[in-house]
Image (cartoon, rainbow, N blue to C red; front, side):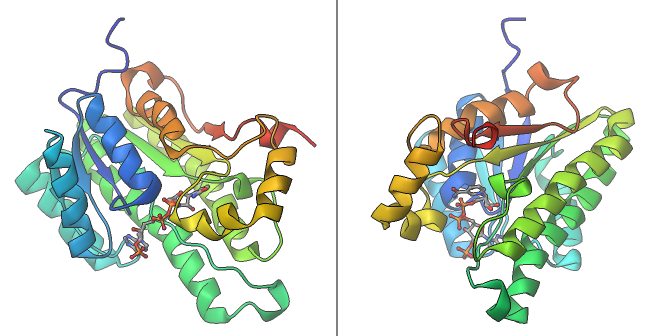
Length: 254
Ligand code: NAP
């Protein structure tokens, strides 16, 4: 029971992991013993991230591809499974944000947000779980958001996509739990990353955020590691279809 959180011998594929939350989770899971496969859309960025992991003595590989493209997914997942080894843990992390008032929201930005944040999660679950089903084992973690539950000005398509990821998590849980695959979500509150840089620098927003959050502050990205290790490990083997909010209490306060 002492080794409930140990990830030795496990292999984790994390999408969009060259920077931000994905890169942090890569470091966190590696600290607990997992071998990491860094996916991102740009190969240079993925290779640089893997270089940093190697410098810390972690086992890691860069497998760059576009998670919105079904044929790229099929080719690369089969390559990983055949040449590197079984994917035990999948973290669907790649995501983007576009901000415009709903009345002016460009259709192209809607398509990009929905394709990357929502459709890609479906395609990745579908392909990776084909292999997990055969092994009757797997952990899938979808990175959701406060906007899986709450609307917010100028980011309606993002909220629509993250609400859909919540239901993808529940739907996939219902269909895959019988194969000993646990599908869960992590819903980060507001964390200091590249994606939120402009908001962090906006004093008015930061003041509002601190008042609105019971913990009274921004989240530090490495505070997400515990939830990811938990949902990747044996400690969560009977936890299915759950969304773990890591938000300083924001969701439960008015
Ligand atoms: P980030 O720093 O922008 O990192 C996302 C990574 O995904 C980038 O390296 C990006 O590459 C990559 N990516 C984009 N499109 C891709 C594609 N089609 N295929 C593969 N990789 C792709 O974002 P983050 O803040 O770490 O956010 C990570 C996840 O957490 C997202 O799902 C986000 O919605 C969620 N989240 C973040 C916060 C927060 O406070 N930051 C809060 C709640 C939820 P490019 O930069 O080259 O596009």
